[in-house]
Image (cartoon, rainbow, N blue to C red; front, top):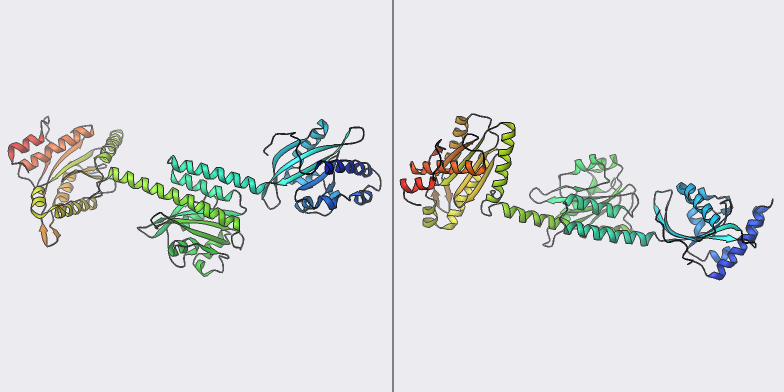
Amino acid sequence: MTDAMAGSGSSLLPDDTLQDLRQRLIRISTLFSAEDGHSTVIQTLDARALLDQFSEEVHMTDRLGRLVFANSAAMSRMRTHAPLTLTAENIYCDEAEARFLLEQELMARGTVDEREEVIAEPDGRKVWLFTTRTPLRGDEGQVVGLMVMSRDITERKQHDETRLAYAQTLEMIARGKPLRDILERICLMVQQPLTGICASVLLFEEETATLRHGAAPSLPDAYTRIVDGVQIGPRVGSCGTAAWRREAVIVRDIQTDPLWSDFKELAGAFDLRSCWSTPLMGADGAVLGTFALYSQTVREPSEAEIRMTSLASDLAGIAIERARNEQKIRYMAHHDPLTGLPNRALFWPQFSRALAQAARENRKITVAYIDLDNFKQINDGLGHAVGDEVLKVISQRLIESIRSTDLAVRLGGDEFAIVFSNPMQDEAHVLRRLDEIRRLMAAPIEFEGHSIHATSSMGVAFFPKDGTTPEELLARADAAMYEAKAGGRDKLEVAPMTRIVSGRSLLAEACPAE
């Protein structure tokens, strides 16, 4: 319960009405103690006609907390037509004891109290009220009861909370918070003012045309795991169909709607009865994902739910698009745009981490430095388009030749490197494998009527015997690569045991510049 400033003196009814009600309550309270109290009180309540005109709830209690008067608005929430049978327990349900003690304290002090408070309805809904409690006094100044006037401010509170949540979510997006956290916040923002609703965000994966789990904080984990990766299509529930059609899909009854024919048993197992899904669209018109609301009752969405869906869809679309743009920027900063291989900016930290882990686990690491032979002649003789194609094909062959635990990188120009981060075999086996990769790279490349043979020279160094830092190892592999070039190219050489002077000077002495 949130307390407002107490005792400001403002009220929901005119002063003359309040004064009249105070006098009537004094008479009512006196009559209530008589043997025929109930019938006499009912006859006395001619103020009801006036109070029933107000949308605000008005009720009165005697000094013991028993309800002696309630207008129609109050009785509607209390779900009764006999106010004299009610006590604080009926009025406030779960909050009965706390409210009773509060009202007894107010009557003991004789002070007016104003506050915002929350009432839990039997159906689980939370109702916000702005309530004024005014002690009523008898002729001698004694407090004989309490008049309580409440105005339903639920819509305003929900609007304020939604605005705050919206602003906080935008701040999360601006600060680059994790996408999963942002999407969960959006789901909770939508669910908070609604009853019996579960929100879900699925992310569209264009390469596979599937929807992947984004956020669904209130859906059963078992359900989200099953629908994760579902293929979009014309009859794939609400979300798969919405992404396929690129338009909102409202399913009133999952069990009877043909869009859910393949999934209705799954939904029924988790007591999901209706689902309304909206595609999330990017600025370029591409589908980013879907936002959906599930209900456990068979129905269509209310106007409030439609408004919240529109608000959430806008936010989720902004968050997803920003996250993907940032991901693209990070990818471009760490990958070669031509080949898609990691570049030097990504290579050094990954190589350093691999060495640190190998040192902890007492393992070896192999690094190979690769330089294409006579690539300048290919570029100059056949053109840069052919040269680019050669680099792309060579890179793809490298990727296909290594394991997921290994690393292939384009260092620049026609230079590449491979790091075997978990070699389980001895050095001789690793060298045979690297030589196989070198031979595979040299296979003919057919492009625009040309058959291109691009051989390479490869130098190899081992951790820890050839060095313990990325710089040392790459320098030794580089020196070995230039020994391979100096020895005639199209071959593999292992780093020499002697101190490295300059691999490039070896090349300059042994063969002409490329």
